Length: 189
Image 1 (cartoon, helix red, strand yellow):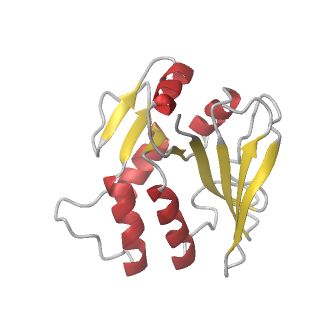
Image 2: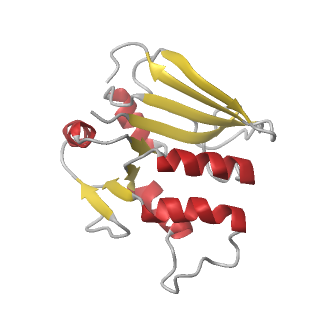
């Protein structure tokens, strides 16, 4: 059974909005590239899928845009070639190596987890909350940025039950950011 890992950038005050001063640097992009490479497939909700596609899908010209720094290209190439599953009741179709996931979320994700492989990766805000409430997340990874945002969506806001976590790993970055990895201690999926 492959594990489902939830990974996200977050500020010290819990904000996980991509525009809250969570700009990537070279060191964090190397880290996220390695994390993407550990996943057999990515699981996105509609909003995250559309945001990631607009930023990281390779243009038809087969050339990365001028705004992209050289150190961002390995991440872009890794995420561009990844298999994706998109949970959405509003999209009629997806492409970019993606497949729509419909129906009962818990059953659909359990089926994906039962396939052989190294793991699934989920990002975003809304879908991970639903997955956490269903007890389907096997590992939580937060890249905590030394920023106070003071506004925006917060990490797992509205979680129905407390989830006790045990630490697995910690990595400090030169920027002051800290990656912290945990797994649930009760009722692990």
